[in-house]
Image: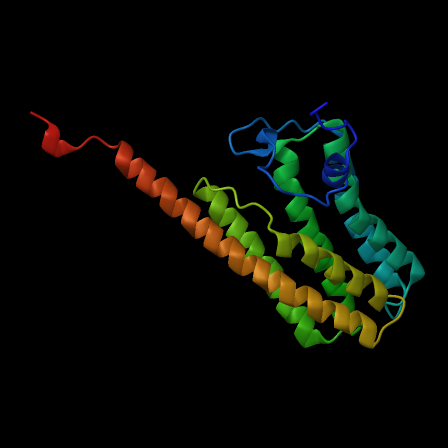
Length: 223
C-alpha cells in the first residue's frame, strides 16, 4: 500500500526530464567504461553528422533564411532531448554519452552562430558573447576533467539551451526582434550557468586536493 505506483507522477516527471533531482547515474561517472554502443549514443552520432549538413544547406541558401536549414537545425537540437529521453527509458546511460552530449550541444550552437553571424541574422555583438561563452564552457569542462572533477549540468545550463537554440532556429525563418529577445534571455541564463560551473569545479577540485592531503602519511608520527 505504501509503495509508489510504477508510473506515478514523480516517475513520469523524471522520465521526461522535468525532475532532475538526485545524483547523476553511476554509469556516467568518471572511471566508468565508455559503453559507446547505446541508442542514446547513436542519436548523438547522428546529431554530430548532421551539423556539417546543416552548414552546407544554410550557406547554399544565399541569405541564411531557409526552411530546410532551419528544419535540419531543429532535428539536431531536438536530438538533445531525444537522447536523454532514450537514456531514461532504456537505462542505457554511458560515460561516452555524458562526455559527448555537452560537446555536441556546444558544436550545435557554434554552428548556428557561424550561420547567423555570416548572414547577420542576429546582432553580432550578442553572437560574439554567446560564442565566447560556449568556448569558455568547453575549456572549463576540459579543465575539470583534467583534474578528475565531473562538472554536472546545472539548472541554468539545461534551461539556457532552449532559448538559445530557438533563437537560432527562428532567425533562419523570421529574423527580427523575437529571435533577438530569445537570444538575450538564453545568454543571460548561459552566463549564470557558466559561473556556477566554475564555482562547482573549483570547490570539487579543492575538496579532492584536501582529501589527498589528508590521506598522506604524517611524517611527524614516524619513528
